[in-house]
Every structure is written in C-alpha cells, then in structure tokens.
Length: 95
Image (cartoon, rainbow, N blue to C red):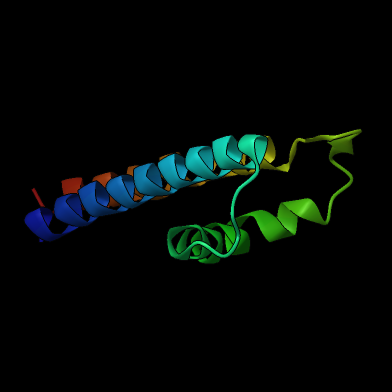
C-alpha cells in the first residue's frame, strides 16, 4: 500500500504541475491575443476554463488587469500541499 499511495502522491503532484503550466500558457497567450479558433487554444481553454471560472465571478478585475489567475494559483498551491501531504502521510502509515 505504501507504493500505491506514494505513487498516487507523485501523480497528483505532477497533475497540479501540469495545470500550473497550462494556466501560465493561457495567461501569456491572453497578453498577445489568442486565436480562439485554433484547435490547441480550444483544448487549453477547455482545460483551464473550469479552473478559472469560479474566480472570475469574484470582483478581481482592476481596469484591464484580471487577478483571478493569481488567486487560482494560490488556491491550487494550497490544495496541492494539502492533498499531496495527506497522501504522503497516508503512505507513511503503511511503512
């Protein structure tokens, strides 16, 4: 069971890392005006929209600047620490 939970912790950690990178790519593309009809852009939007939409409902926009991705990063960082830490502690129980 140790191997299962430590492997799961590694996998969840990598999934969070991939989500971080996808959010960074989306933010950079939004600065340069992304082509929403591009197939890769549509995939990126389908993955990141569900993450950003709850934060976009909050009043986090100041002029042209949207601070919802920053809040999303902090929440994802907190969830990553919480979930991965919990899985590692669970794995340690089976040593």
